[in-house]
Length: 286
Ligand code: SAM
Image 1 (cartoon, helix red, strand yellow):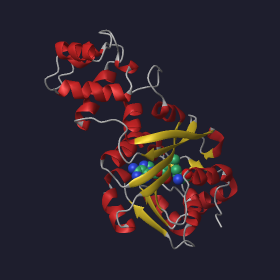
Image 2 (image 1 turned 120 degrees about the vertical axis):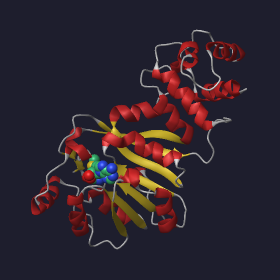
Image 3 (image 1 turned 180 degrees about the vertical axis):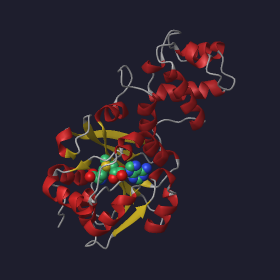
């Protein structure tokens, strides 16, 4: 039975170990059992699953995951939390605690060792200061994964889910939507955490596509184009791409390609769909 997930037990554990929160590690621990149950439900964790948890903290969500999954790998950076995790997770023989910075872990190797290279599920209440590098790292290094169900800052969840024509639409939306189908599962208020964060939170589920939804000749180049388009988001594409120093791309080539695509010469990147960015990239390569 999970014993954490309520303020009394969390305070007991923190007191027992004299633990003090470290802001630099984005430590806001979940103290609401309903939210914890709903995250595990949203992630669709079953006894067949190997789950990677990033930042287990004192092991609150890890306990819930250990009860539902076949196996849990929990990667935690903070020294001070390791003995606490060994204590709070001592009853579970299906949890492996790894003391490391998630951004330095070879996750492909880990999946190979722990799950014979078969797709894993990532479930986490993320440290918000490294949300984007964690997500992009998982996608770009082609970690075999089925889905990522994570708590992130509300605004970041919104950015991942929106389409063109909204102020939140940008390079992150397009990158996430190239690799996965995003769905916001729930919004979570600051009162569900200890200490309370200064921002609202949301749980978003990213279900990995088997194949990307668009065909692009050079993925890397498309993301260069996308970044350049949003670097100067108030500028027209002709200006932002034409001045970005991209290989063989000039204002004239951009202008020609826009004409081929039947798009206005004054259009901005924020108006283009992922499909149009893929088409633009393919045309710019020729
Ligand atoms: N999962 C716990 C919970 O929900 O109560 C804690 C979540 S807390 C928002 C984020 C956790 O990530 C903290 O335990 C923090 O120490 C850990 N963390 C921060 N940076 C990390 C990194 N680079 N690698 C691994 N863990 C990290």
